[in-house]
Every structure is written in C-alpha cells, then in structure tokens.
Length: 194
Image (cartoon, rainbow, N blue to C red; front, side, top):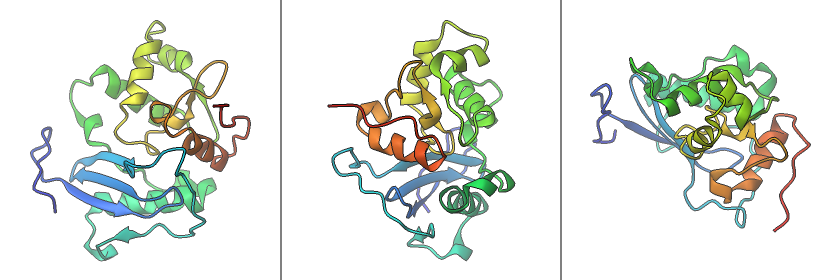
C-alpha cells in the first residue's frame, strides 16, 4: 500500500500494476474509486508492440489481496481486453473525482464521456462540448482529454476530430489510439503519415 493519501477522501492510496495487450497499466485508487490508470510512461509510437495475451494479471499481488476497487478494476480490464461484447454486464470501477459535490469542468467532461460514449462509438470534440451544454468549449474538451487521468475507463480514445482521428497522449501514442479503436470495431482510422 502506498503512503499517499487521497486529498478528496483522506483515504490511503493503493497502486497496482496490471498486464495487458497494450503493456503494463499502472492503477492508483483509494477506497472511494480510481485516481489514475495509465500505460507505461515510456510507451511511444516508436516502441508500441501490442501483445497477444489472453489474461489480464496483477503483478506483485495475489488476487485475493486486492482491495474491492482494484478487484473491480481487474475484472473490468479482463473483460475489456478479452470479452468486449459482455463488458456492459461487468461493473465499472468507481472514479474518486466523480464523487465530489461540485464537479470541475474537466471532471464533467470525463464523466459525460464515460457515461455516454460506449465501445464501438466515437464522438467529436464539438459534439462532446454540446452534450455538456457548452458548444463553445471545444478546446476545453480537448484539454480535458489531454489531462484524462483514467484512460481506457474514461475512453478519451473515442473522442475524435470532425475530419480525422485526432491526437492521443499529445500525439505520442497514435498507434495505441488506433489499436483501441480497432479493438472496439472501429476500423476507419489509421496512423497519420509522418
């Protein structure tokens, strides 16, 4: 267990490392929900090499030692990568930031995206801004996507530009975005020319 404490709930933070077809996924959570979920920091388009694994595993811990939120996250990731068609039957891990009384704009963007754009669907930055009743906030929506701390669960890879795929991780992980979209059955996007 990490010594960090959640600023919102004052609960201790726990970190876990999960294997996945994309590489290692680092997850941080308190008892109220996820704080972060991200791929290895050194992952780029140049070194991205998806793995054909069939099982998402937690590294360094036994499944029975996982907290409830980490177990929910583990089960959700397992279904996302191996049984996407039944993902809606699996509970999604709570996200700590969504439990605040007053949601900041970015948190509203992430919550709206998570709740309304499902696997196999994409939405433009502009259409997501409209769902927030703020059609002029296209750039702010883009900023929220760039700063999304819980990627995959809050599916920023499903947010695209009106005329192309748009960026992922500031443009350094375009191949990951293509992989995630194809995994979800969206084949119309390809890696942009260098």
